[in-house]
Image 1 (cartoon, rainbow, N blue to C red):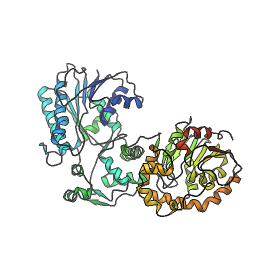
Image 2: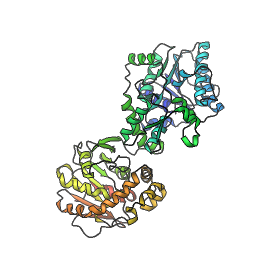
Image 3: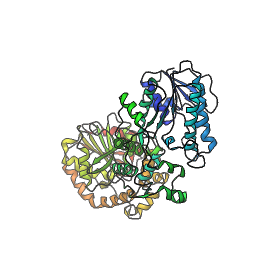
Image 4: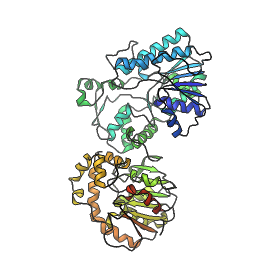
Length: 561
């Protein structure tokens, strides 16, 4: 094999395997359990040059494929580990890989992936101090260097900082999650705290270049231009449209306060320092290899999008691209094609754009599905929803079918009346202004705290829909500060605007269809095409997506109008 990667199912290891395969190398992936193959296949990686081998590096290695280059990306990265558990992989495992590599007849390089905080160690691992994870990485760093010298193994050690990218949900991600959910009243550390980052894409390209370079160098791979932690958090907060904490809590105080009060894991505190790291050799190597470091702020924003899309590791995004975009002056969560959609899908209450996932899966063309301002994952806007929708549609170059549900039907109707040349048709699903008003309790101030505490299972029962990922997504958003309150406020506003929305129906100059469930019919009659779905309630796109999707037609007009 050209290369063998230990720890190939880990966050770094799996991306490294993908990078090496993309470069045409024959790669052996050493794993305990093969979760790697489906991950690679889901990303379209050609697997023909891949060999999976099952191995436990905590024991002496034997009977593995010979390889020219050996990468040890295996590591136990977690806080709260016991010394024995941490050492078994991070120290004993690393030495076992080295001993095996020393016997390879054509070994070109052993690349050992360590950690950037090893430069702050004094050479003696302190398992009683910073914690078993950091202590074991420091011990392994010294042990691998020493043993490689004794065995004349060509070694390069890479010390990456916090690695960010799709699928990274630990470390700094926990801080971003607290920020997103309004649970970060103060920032740990001080104004000069430096928590450097590097992206997973940059790191694996760096790693792939190492074996062809001279041995002996040890690289700290991190972005020296990473903003100091307070500015880093402000950057992410502004991108997501949430409030950043203004206060900081010194690390020394955090160490003295009870964990139940601070919520801070003691092992994370050693990472909150103003230390800088010896990056000159890594920067010179990257320059020689033609590797450009992506701007830190751009990387942080892209990663924030990935974290929110995946609900910080608890869900899978239903479509890409996705992310926050500035619409009507504020961050709006947008899923899908912003420029050439065949359908624009607007959700109703108390849902978000994920509401449309079952229907979108049955449509042949690209879709654009945003979260309405102040709802779901979008930040509030100080402009009317009609203005927000017009700004959202400004980059669209097609004439899509505009599909709206419930409360979103009014703004969609207004846009179709004002811009008939911009849409190919209009579909109103369960239009709230043509149906019975929501119960008085749902429109009261008492509804907000109830909605915020409502678990997904109860929310599904309340709405009369299955408890699928769409409902779990909505329930997660309702727990965020202000979202449940704005849902209740929107329901109250709907009552006042019903007559105005209804009057716009007579001014329509585009093909239109109304879709309702038989259990949630229209109030009164309208002189427009209406499709009633038997057995459906207010959310037919969730309960009967196979019936709703064909009614949406293609760009040009809804089916049957």
